[in-house]
Length: 226
Length: 218
Image (cartoon, rainbow over all chains, first blue to last red; front, side, top):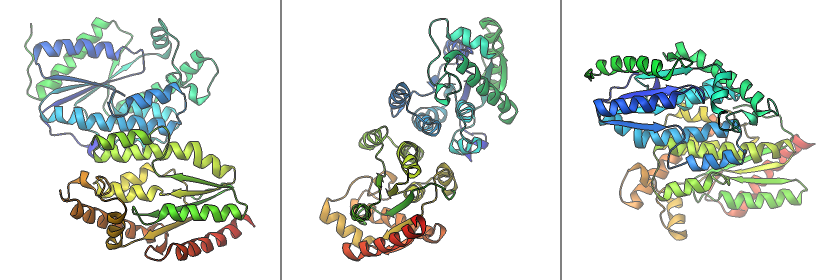
């Protein structure tokens, strides 16, 4: 499977992972600002955003009518479409591709929903192995506090489809606890770089840039200090 | 794939486009209903959630082999979990117009790995009976030309075998037939000569189904 091998494309693929409220999107946005100013040729892509299917998936989520397997397959369609139309061409053309969530999101969430781990890993076998995957680890209680600053946990985010609890907050804790468990298991399996997401935004960003710099250097891209 | 333990019965009709699958399913449905069985039909690419997205994407030529494969797999999973499995649990005879084998044939011709696509569908129950309407490419071409002419995807034009519709259709459907014939033994298809008359085929399918019904329901 392609996903097991390093890619030999000129570009660099960097992804961030972690549960909702871990701060990964914030970190990636700040990183993007920095990279855009220093090396240009940066492209951003996020989970469930393809023109092909993301609207359908969002609609189905609203109707709360997706079984774990259909949920899993629809996200795989989305990913396959973005891989083909955004990620692969950009890597071939030498871009730095920043991905907000990657296949590990599916490996964590779908398995937490009860989908067979080897089934979902096989499904994403066509994916490109990233040059760097950073996992923003945060305790469930903290992420819950962060996302609930302005809203309730959403139906699927809280794993309400699994009927773990009638209380969305309690359901969120149980479900996201399972997701975190799956992420933790992947740290060694896929060489995820763990980031303590309870640290300040600034501290995390400094560390994030340091790691990215090293990866880019290996790709022959030097970033000048300001 | 595993044998199912549901009360109902799962009967699949497979074959290329224009092999006569839908006609046979319609006849079999009527027959079984006359025999006082509850019958449910599920067609390939027919979920209310995803089928229209597939059509739209086909119109706009947005597919590559992986998305094509996954999209149909999503449609299938949705139908299985919302319709087919509940019907089997309730004791219906479920007639499937195409099943996972369609994906094994088409997706592999489009370049995905056989093991990969088989694993995608490994949760699907093994049918109690799978009829394969085998129609040689020559007859198939005559039927399609007489009926409607060539369609882009039915001709496999997306794969790029040839820019000539006639040639592309022939190459594509020949490859599909090769994949099906490989599966006959692998999955124990009951092969039916698609060149026979509608009535003859119906008689044959009816008899085989009747025999199985006896062992299952008596």
